[in-house]
Image 1 (cartoon, one colour):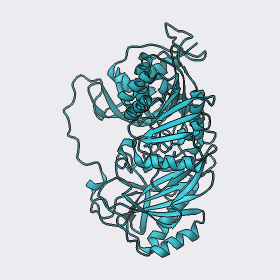
Image 2 (image 1 turned 180 degrees about the vertical axis):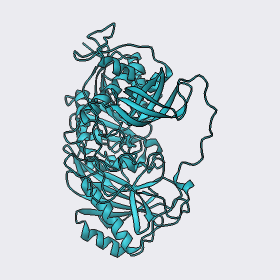
Image 3 (image 1 turned 30 degrees about the horizontal axis):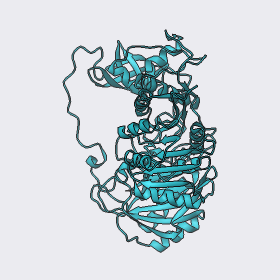
Image 4 (image 1 turned 90 degrees about the vertical axis):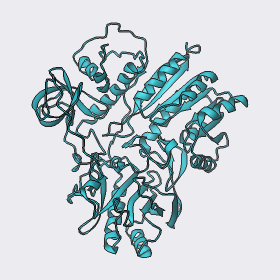
Length: 579
């Protein structure tokens, strides 16, 4: 993903999805794909606002066609011979959950995906759409609930698209995310995963439908105690998912689309699969201060008569409010994304914001006049304060600008990077190459423990930030270069640079095949693979395994609690060096 944008997480993504970014090769294009949704979620100690929220808002003056998915699917002829038909109600058992967080059940052998259903549940559903091998159904009633079912604390959870699995206990989420990784390693990578003493496993034939289920049958059969026939003590060890003590209020960045309604400005997140704005006061995965800043900007803007951007007409001023919070230093940055440079009552607005929110250290304006769903435009200027705020991950300090990428969960970022350094196995004498280095976050972590680190990244602005961050931390044993890893690393090899360890943290599509070839040619002793997509990770591990490496250990890290996204870090060693 882009270093100037975050995962869908991957919202994502939500994100999707390290100070490095995950769609970095498509920098501006992925900004603001409506996943403001990933910017909202709770702390167990927090209480949802008592103010009314969750109202769907159509952009001012827009027709319904502007806020609903464009076009209407043609009604296809019914498929003959299916055991269920559209609009039929039936009761099914949920045997697993797919990578989108949908429950997977069977009606007389026919697979149905059910949003909101959990593994182990018996549910009554209404069939909404049928295809030849699978269909989609709406959850009507929970006949028998899963022990992992909880009440989602967010008052607009059913409307917003930011979180997918708030209705699942946190322990259940962590277990499912580990199993998701295991199933991808086995199904896509054809890798042998070590069966722990308390686990059960089975090998089954996979149909194309079952592949969409991400091994849901295996989950059910493990629960029933079915053993794998060739059980062995050899294989890849997949550790439990590293979760958070407090899996709420973890996001340090909010990107909130702004609309208009009677009474003034509204802002929140897009409803699932649409551009309808769900007005809201609080997001339980956002830091509380981010909520406060967004609310105050809406209030002050409404009072001063600031207009909201209308994506259908291209008129109106305020498009998005972006807020960044530095967890360690407490500093905050506010970015007003506007459809033009002129801001009516600018001084009054800025003065009121400063008075109301004293911990804001930077107020910036980004100008985006394009009729696009990309959040940021090319021009950014400082309205008040500094052009950056500062934060730390571990002992490393980072300067965060209006458009630079910085991991949205700083607590888990430190966990992820710590595991990456551990898997690199550094003694202080090694030369390390960090492919897809982004703004240098992992590079600088590695530089604390290595002799020399080389980082490569295709986005020039990211390398500028990486070099600045190296200077900021007085790290002289790290060098950054602009370019594609698969082009730059072979050139380094020609210059005599031999890597003991190569670290990769690619976008969701995985490593470029030429980079994998380069790694196999360079033959470093160890490879550390950081991934935001278990399926492309498994595919690439298969290539590295076939090329002479052994996958030793895998650790899932929960960077985005209450969403379906999972980050993974992997240690590989050359087979001829493994004892």
